[in-house]
Length: 313
Length: 303
Image 1 (cartoon, each protein chain N blue to C red):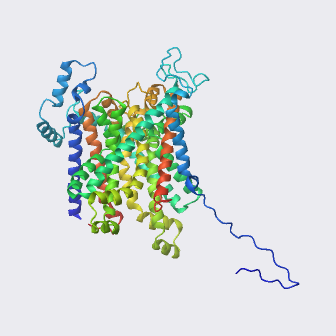
Image 2: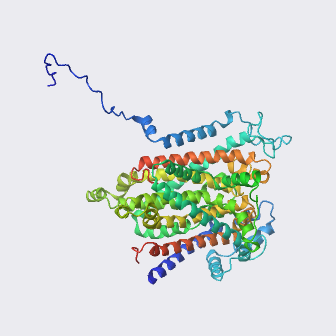
Image 3: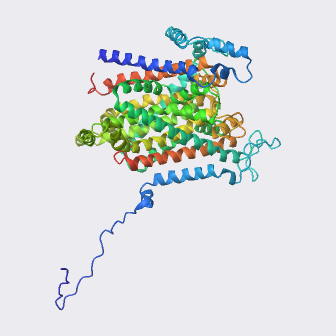
């Protein structure tokens, strides 16, 4: 078991190395002169030279990559071109809103998606099943910012139930914090709910056909007991896997959701970084998000042994 | 053989029974196929409608989508401007209709390019252990970057153009195809008919062409439709956050990006492109779901 954990943890290193190499090499393999593109159309030759120097583009690739990797290992993601602040500082300032948004979305999505997926599988072929499947197709098709604007328009502007935009830190009370994040979490969660509900339904359909479910029914175990104890537990591995893969959707969606709802988080920071073509900041954000994604999926891999005792390493 | 039994006098014959079950006449041909797969019919019809709109944009009562009319800014929908006008007085109906061109071009181009490159990578890694080890590590790395962020990073270093948007989204989508193809190739390699072909002395390229490639087409077609849908959403998101197609080109994402600042007072600017984008993506997804059910009966009705 310990050996397995060690092996899985070590296996993430090459993955992160590829991400780092890729993000770094882009500066060198991108067509045209990245320094000129970053500097913009109105830049003077001196500006371009300054940016080229600050990105290290004037020195050989391997030397620069070595230095850069060394820096990252020491927790230094470089300096923003635009603000001249360390990238780590800028990220740290914006971390809380994004973490809050993702945590609420995750809880909300799992709390909604798993029950409706179970219900759809139980009542397979019924009106409820069709409704859940139709919702799933819509969830995949309506882009996150469309849902975001729709929700903001109906619940914030027309009905005035919730604030339109903005963010209140958790330190100022859980009520205002939650109030500001409810609509963004629903908007961000829609596609995630669709994904989880669909896989829950598929996994449950598979499990409900098993002999032990019939046995449980024959023993007189109630419907709820069968669904949630016998079936859901055995269907949990694919569901949990998809929850982990779906984190990528949340990260991508957060960029948009935070823009619509004016939440000062990492997504908003990403958008600002693009508009200013602040490549060191973008590099840092891509690395950070990929790291979170890889880490979450590593934890999920390791959780399989808890969910399914048959899995032994 | 079936000579009617002679009826003795004084006996009446019961009337012949009608068929208990009317013979099922399955509809055949293309119409029958669509009849059995209503999602393909619905998705395909919507898709054709959007395609027609994009192709015939100049003949659909549109004006120049970039023509400015500074005296008529942010007008609500009216008879003169069906969808209203934006903050530069441009006709939103024309912009939305022309916007279909960008979305569909990006969707189809990304689906095609990602399929071709992904297919090549998948085939190579399915057949060469060494290449597999290297390529799959690279794909693992690419897959661990959320695709929107990957596209964002690529767009940050290039000048905004439709071609660059297509390239950026394609790179983000390639790992999905190559993983799929590799999986199919690895399972097909174990099939008896491939062994038989090897035993018969068929060369590797011929095996790939005749036995492997045709079997990857069905799952790849399904995957390509999903990639098309996802590419259209990513294009809109990139444009929306200002990292996509240049603002001069009317794309649905750009129109929404321009309407962003005014969405609380003039929601129609965001509304119309949003509806068109959602309907188009829905059409492609329906098509994908329908194709999946039709091409892979084992998966049908499960997911």
